[in-house]
Length: 88
Image (cartoon, rainbow, N blue to C red; front, top):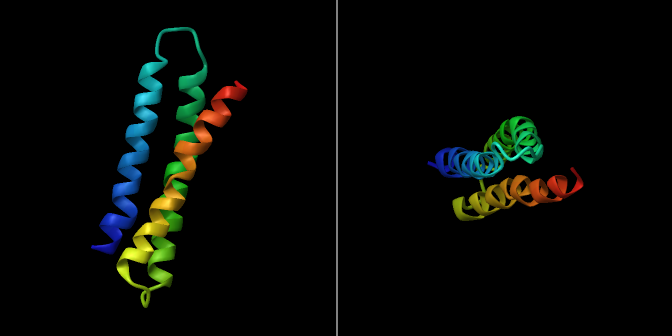
């Protein structure tokens, strides 16, 4: 259950965020959608792998503590995406 909530749910939320950002910028001549897609293509699997390793390496911690840290780590992509998009 820790893996489903700590790995799968953040990945789904990150994918939805990137999908919404890409769909909002489709057809208007902007490169923002491509930038969000490329960032998400590498960052989403990376955060899933790191979250899975973190959950596996800390079996003694309480589940709520581990899941909170996984969600905080998964927030890196939604926070960094607008920063990179402003640079485009």
